[in-house]
Amino acid sequence: MTVHQKLQSSIDAWTHSVESISELVAPLAESEWNRATECPGWSVRDVVSHVIGVECEMLGDPRPIHTLPRDLFHVVDEFSRYIEVPVDVRRCHTAPEMTSELEYTIIRRSRQLRNESRDPGTTVRGLMGKDTTLDELLTMRAFDVWVHEQDLRRALRVPGNLDSPGAQLVRDRLLEALPKVVAKDAGVPAGSSVVFDVTGETEFMRTVRVDGHGRGRLDSHVTLAPTVSLSMDWETYLRLACGRVRPAAVREQVKVEGDAELASAVLANMAVTP
Image (cartoon, rainbow, N blue to C red; front, side):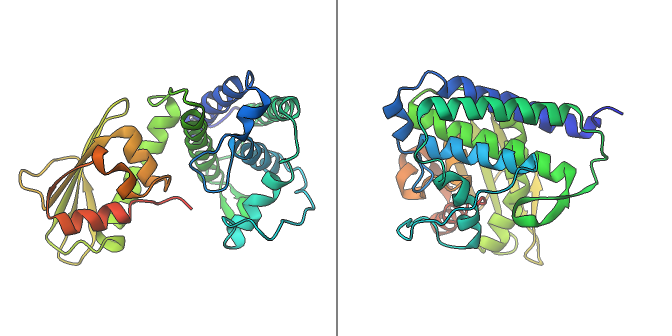
């Protein structure tokens, strides 16, 4: 058997992004690995360590036995502690050690994915031992790796790949979350509509309509008189939706029309990633 067609798009997006990360960090000087990213408490080295650590876990490697320092302010719950262990254990690694391990991990993981023959609905073990489907696991790995590629690009001031296969996958997953963001998290009242007009490398325009029962519905048709209209570029939308910045930090990049109070509520609740 070969890789199921439904899985191939996620694998292709993951491959493109993880190889882009490898190319991006290969020439870095030692000092550049310490640059801060928009992920709280994480440097360039830490983001790459996270990518390596999760992919090693996907390969079935044992997790490191390691006790975290008590002064990591960004470690606030069980999930962040779980994620931090393979990051913290690599904080003493040199640039050559990091690039070598990343390259080796990509080779191993790519071989594993090329030989993947299971059905997309197969139950597999995800992060923290939680059951998920193979399709969902691979989709979220492609999502995570592309978002972290962009974290690294912003930290290193090397923009790119904002319209790559990973970008398309991330856009689609973020759009799926919009009805909940608007109707439940932001509490936009029934009968209201919120338009998102996103421009740039990966552009789209969508409306979230809140029905009489308070449920949100995503619509590709744009209403002529929305309750709120939010316009921004794709990278700003990404940073907000992935919790990289607070709305106040990108106020100049977001154009708001309509109910200002509701707009603020929507922007304050846009982050959908942990």
